[in-house]
Amino acid sequence: MIKSTDICINRKNSIYVSRDLTYGRRKRPAAVAVAEDTINGSLPVFRTLLDLPDDLVFRLARMKGKFAGLYVSGVKTVVINPLYKQKSFLNTLAHELVHAEQFYQGRLETVYVTNKGWLHHWKGEINTNKGKTYNSYRNQPWEKEAFERSVTLCEEVEKVFQIFK
Image (cartoon, rainbow, N blue to C red):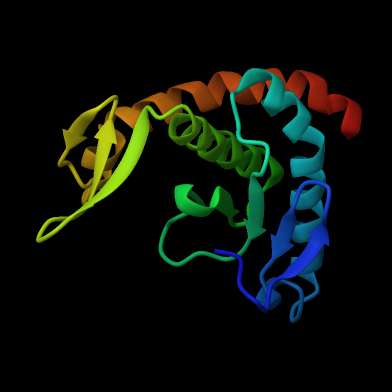
């Protein structure tokens, strides 16, 4: 998921930035710096609250459509758009880290099925809901959990994260 043109800005937490965010308008580097600070400051707290893989990688990149973030389980990478306000960025980060935990613990898996494509297995059961509409996406069990837990996770992180501001 990390591209050859991406730039590593933090080896400790494996944070990479897409090249298009490091050049161009002046506003982007500031957003990238805030995103990096948010990851660096909140990740130790998230690690105490979630069961996460040690080799997690972060990629800051603009995303197409209305996506703010995603988790790529095969390469243990959280891809997140840094061009959001810090609170929204933190909420998206929490949401994607819940998905990272779901995959790491084996509760959520993606399996390729011929003629059907990629299907999700939630707690061992195949779920054929592909989430094509916003409501069907939100009603997938792993998304329900991620949306619910991200709220409380952000509250916990913000208590500690105030130290870093």
